[in-house]
Length: 281
Length: 307
Image (tube, rainbow over all chains, first blue to last red; front, side, top):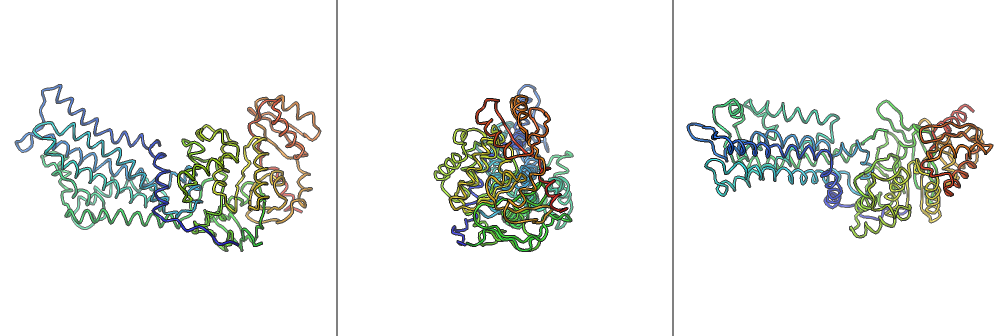
């Protein structure tokens, strides 16, 4: 019998080819409609605020005797909508489905019977997820920035560096949540439920309490990257947000997010490599 | 020449359910048919030899190497799975080329390999059409194209003729035979003896997770003929077809279903030959799909097991 003649393809090259194959599929999937709605939500809200301030004599709210600026509103949207909701939800919905969709659609067979490491399928699809979500979420944040920042006494030029930091933070969040839930999706049977519990129960829950449990979240590290001060007016919302106000040093956060992303991706690809995926007949 | 596939005391369990039970077999070079009713263990065997599943017990080698966790072996294997699943938004050409690219070839090379493969399965004209718009037969053929595009040494085909119209069926059988004549190896599964018989005389009979028989098809052929064979024919003019069928003495019974006629015949060979001729002439309208429920074979297996 002739020995296998070809050289085992590298993980990186294979992952890039899977990325090519998956990006178009992901962009035109039903999930993208959901993504567009999520990313469009803050834009619609920002437009709403802008329109209200244009057509009514109402003014921006006062905080500690000073009128709130457009950049503060932008910061609030970043905190409340992007960090606490959009980024984790996208991570859960896309990350858990990277392999599950292929299994459910029974198309995984075509990828697993090609001369590429199985882990490359996961990594390639993860890269497609990252591209797909950053291409929609980052422009959404930029649009919101340009709509709300000019309100009040903020200047766009002055605030622009903080926008760049926001975009970096959002990309880091998408990377970390996506990788974590790619691992959950590859490993567990009900990944979506587990993901939602993690994002909406575990993370907010443990962040409230002092101690080390908050180190087992992504939000804890992510909030250190946010350039905006956490809203501090005396409202219920800000009261809740203040509970999360303990933030780690920037370098620790960056290193931890990178570590979580790489470790989760490595573990996920190991699981995909070793696991049997039995398709429904 | 060494065996193409060797299974040594292979068992596969899905939890408490046995998919394959202590199977030891070898598949020689050339074309081999894997025959058994649905649920017999054919698909489990196919998944084990294509490295999608790992054996619970025993060992499997393909082309002399273990297949599980050995992706480089897929350079030499082409697999056409049973399931009718695709990236429907892609065209046939895009899909086949994208899969061939996973074999490490350049974009240009992948395009030309995909075009050649689509041409071999008579889909060159529909290469630019979205797979979602393909008929069942075209979908089967595009699956074949992705399996053979990289010119593998071993082609593994899981129910490749299911749902094809008679003309496409004849062409596919011819293609598989040509492949065998060219010195390539093919393992093809089916639950229809007639299909396997038209490609090879070398068969593996599988039922209830066990290999019942290996070897020449002719020994069980006589048994098969004692059992009526059911054929489901989806066509434009079912009544005209029915009239043509009734004129032949091998047709035992017939019934109509929505857009289809279901025929029981005592001589499947003669029936299929006539059906192909009718489809080719087009005189009784288009014949879209021909399938055969697996109860034909199930009856034979029950008979074999009892005797």
